[in-house]
Image (cartoon, rainbow, N blue to C red; front, side, top):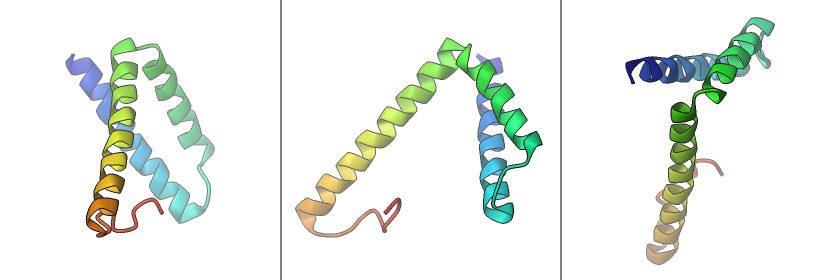
Length: 84
């Protein structure tokens, strides 16, 4: 369990670094691409982490849908234009 948490934390950290690099330099370095590919391969072979990430993505969609419904119901934009 702790191993999975470390892998997931490493993945999140690498995602953040890749995003920052993309914004700053306009593209990812070969090294970052390689790290993402390697860690992605490890994650894809780990059923627990894969299931967790899938559940997290589904939750994000549900949360966004709820925010849209609330926005329409009370006519206030609670998303603060995030993702739009």
